[in-house]
Image (cartoon, rainbow, N blue to C red; front, side, top):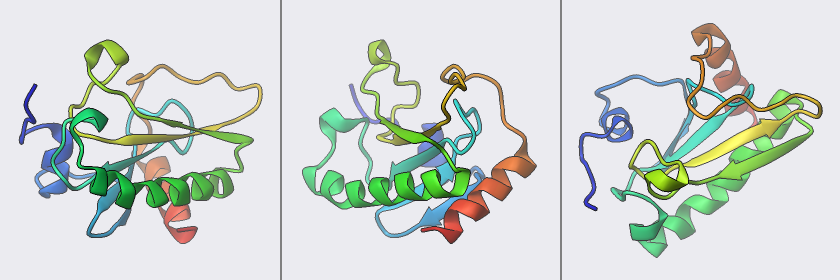
Amino acid sequence: MTYDQNNIFAKILKGEMSCHKVYEDETALVMMDIFPQSRGHTLIIPKASSRNLLDADPATLSAVMPLVQRVARAAMVATEADGVRVMQFNEAPAGQTVFHLHFHVIPIFEGVPLGTHGGGRADDAELAALAKAMAARL
């Protein structure tokens, strides 16, 4: 499979679509998931063009993983979560729906079930507030 330069994350990285940005550097963009599985569900999107983990440059993976860890820590504090889940999908049968490498950081709250992947859209005001709270902890 080849990388599609017009996938939604590529468009966001090019500034063609908006997002609730938490953080950005030369390596990656961190943003709130607009269809969260839990409050504070965040995405880390490497800027390098790769479809998923299977075709990513190892240097990209090496550069982005410390950021994934920082975001996971920030999500725990900002949301007062009981735990955090880090997920990454590779190809459609595994659950990948956007074919640009990305990592999900999903705060877990004891006794609260996760929503479905790609379920209902979150409130923009709540996403903006969460993005600000997360950014303050990065």
